[in-house]
Image 1 (cartoon, rainbow, N blue to C red):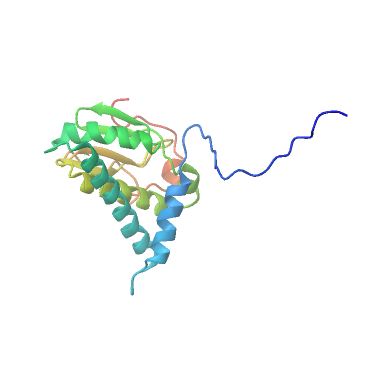
Image 2 (image 1 turned 90 degrees about the horizontal axis):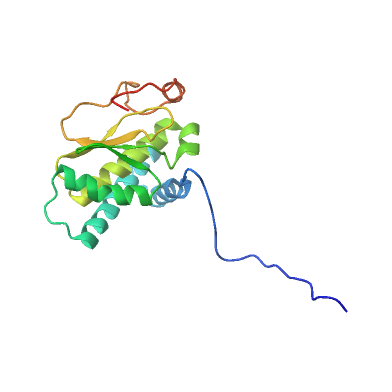
Length: 185
């Protein structure tokens, strides 16, 4: 007689494990929405950046609505942001009361392929998040550094982006450089 054979069927659940966490699906969703909602006279990159910013603003506004933090100064803005950044795979590292470095780029594999586009989308998304959160006194700045996310959160007016290409975005040549400490770690 014997045992009844096991029958396997595909599941509707999608399970993914990535260490460190990677989230290419977020960039894919932004790009799909940008294509579907591209406005007359708008080029593809502009549509992607607008869509990323809108998506970030929506996330920031939802975070603000659910936490109801009241007026946010720089330090409280960063404290509230850290949990959301962690949920999205950025691995926030609080360097100072008004500075958070993002130790992981959740879009790393895509950024390696097209750093100018992906880092710009990432920057627009995170800048939009701060806008939606109504985070006073904090800016999302491009700060390319090998092995990390290209964006940092810093106190407004605390300096420009770290040295990089003229556009300020992370490019293959910059990210391929050996790691050099750019400020205290």
